[in-house]
Amino acid sequence: MLTLEQNQRLTRVGAGTPMGELLRRYWHPAAAVSEFGKFPLKRKLLGEDLVVYRDLDGNFGALEPHCPHRGASLALGCIESGGIRCAYHGWKYDQSGQCVSQPAEAGGGKGRVKAKAYPAAELGGLVWVYLGPSPAPLIPRYDIFVWDDCLREIGQAVLTCNFAQVMENSVDPHHVEWLHGKYGSYVRGDDAASLFSNHAVKIGFDTFKYGIIKRRLVQGQTEESDSWKIGHPLVFPTMLRVGGGGHNQMQIRVPIDDCTTHHYYYTAYRPVDNVKLPLQKSIPLYDIPLYRPDGTFALDVTEVQDMAMWISQGPIVDRTKERLSRSDVGLAHLRTLYFEHGKSRKGS
Picture 1 (cartoon, rainbow, N blue to C red):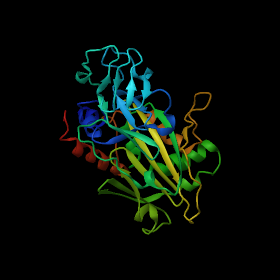
Picture 2 (picture 1 turned 90 degrees about the vertical axis):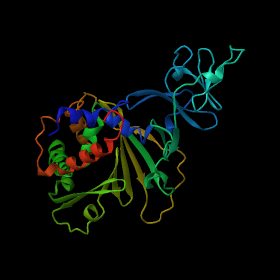
Picture 3 (picture 1 turned 180 degrees about the vertical axis):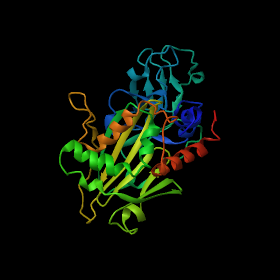
Picture 4 (picture 1 turned 60 degrees about the vertical axis):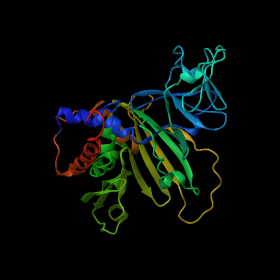
């Protein structure tokens, strides 16, 4: 159980909040490369509205959404070589936000005008944005994002809940047996989900350089099994690395605001038998089928079972009322990590 103040520290992601300032020290994906076209994309990240674009030179940029001149939307702007031009009076801004052209201002003055800008860069078919203080760190080139011998696809869903309850699921090994196993079989009316029903006899959590290693040992396994010996890395602060063999996945939870999360399922299919794959020219983006046409959750889809639970907890789960038990030790581990790393941030 948390106090109200602790719950707010854990879940509020706006500028000036402890969690918001912590998350601003990391890069977050704002869009898939396949989404970019003639006009900029409107995005919201950590409570801040942005426009994200790819200029004609292939470089990515992210700016405040309104032109500093008179407030017209830059989402309607013209994308050019070296930046973006406001549709209203033609003021142009480069990647740093510097105004570099004012067609109607013969006397100049553009050097004194600057839009708020954020570093943006491509990695693994996603465009990442950094909202924190300078200098920006390097984008972490985790294995799955840089492999050159795999086929990739990106699934996405926008969830009406806070990112923290999504991340807490990543340190909750016991939910697999019940939600995906027994409940999955209940929903389907068959035993297709029986693979998930094995009882976890031992769980463990170890802090490492990049976050937390989650371990799970089910009946019939030894500690030499991959799920215990290797485990699943929770990549701090917003990712979970899962999979094995030829199927690998990074689940990325991007806080849009306090009550909304953009969830990416970044999947790479990598043959284990040295099969040569065709060159993949683009990475497809698809929407996770969260709801059925009648508005109910598509609960026969394993990923949707998770998302339904997170959404059902409410926009921000009230942790002052929770009743945790020994099986929830992973939640305490993750919360401690968040609180410790957020102590020195502005607003703490």
